[in-house]
Structure formats: structure tokens, C-alpha cells
Image 1 (tube, helix red, strand yellow):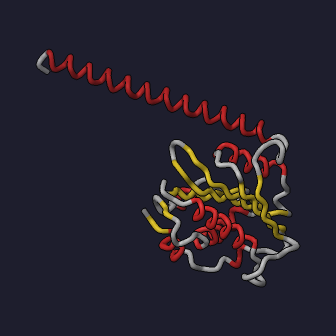
Image 2 (cartoon, one colour; image 1 turned 90 degrees about the vertical axis):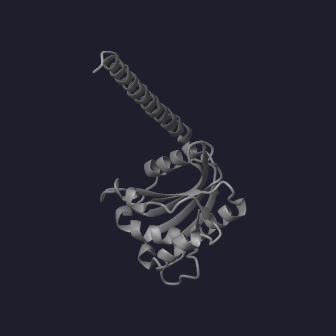
Image 3 (tube, one colour; image 1 turned 90 degrees about the horizontal axis):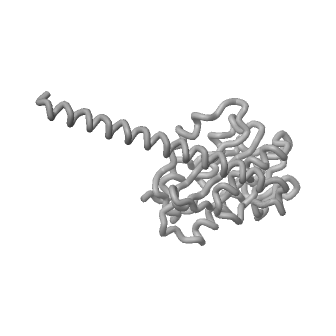
Length: 221
């Protein structure tokens, strides 16, 4: 287990280059812990928001069977590619010292899918099962507030150009989002089926190989 203050010490720089007074900044803190709904929200924003005039941060606390509990921070910006380093510094330096991490995030892997046209970038923080809800909420709040701080005064928020909202990722708040979620669910289902088929083929090959070896051994070869 890793404590968040060890991660924060590596990213102690103040990410001033990240802030801009020319673009409206907004934070969505999702009230859902469903990963697919929160990914659908990210897709919805990418399709419906002009990211040249608005920079968005989506924060969520997801629970999945495979990964357990996590915090996900997703930046959506027309210039995401050029802001990744500062975004990473901002997120990791905002974590409470008592936030229990399962592991230090491998940021280099996250960079593999980036290109100058990228408009989104996510950081996943896998948390220990014994993490306290209060600590998670504190982490989300701190990340969000630090994101909204202005370059001119790092201790105040720009009321005219910054906003933090608690949101529900559903059709009531974001018309058309549930359709996106359904499409994502279908896509992930197909991927899982493909993985299952590949595992079955691999197991079959192993069984055939073992059977062939037994035949060879029976002939003394």
C-alpha cells in the first residue's frame, strides 16, 4: 500500500502553466459510482461541449468488480496534449496524505494513446478497500478546487470563469447520455466475449499439445 503523500512529494511543483484566464473552467463531480455511466458522461461532454471555450474536469469515484474502488480524474480540453504534465502534477499533488493507494499510477502507460489532437486524458487512482468515504470526498474536493484556482492568485477562485457542480450522469441532466452508456455497454460486452473466446482457443491448444505429448510418450519417443 502506498500513502498519497509519497506521490504528492514527487509532484510538488505548482502547475501555474495549466491555468488560463481566457477559458472558462468547470468541474463535474459525479454522484454515480457506476464506471460506464461516468465514461458515458465523458463521451457526452466530448460530443456536446465546445472545448475551445471551456475546459472541463470530470471527477468520479467508481466501484468495479475487476478493479475495486478508484478515483478517476478526466481532463477535457482542446489543448489536452500540451497540458498533460501539469494536469498530472495538479491531481497528484492534491491528494490527502491519508488516502490509501494500492499502487502508484503508471503515468507512462497513460501517455501511449496521446497525440496532438487528443481532447481528453484520464488518471486512475486504485484505492485500498479500507479507504474511508470522507477521505475520498476530501480528495475529490481538493482536486476540483485546485483545478479552479486562477494563475494570478493561487489562493482564490475566479468566480466569473470557474464553477464546480455535483452532477448525475443520466438523461435528466445530459440528454442522450443513456444511449451512449448503452452503446458502451454493448461494446465492452463484445470485448469480453472476444477475450473469452481467445481464452477458450488458448486452452484448447494447450489440451491438444498435452495430448500429443502423451501420444509421443506412449511410443517411447
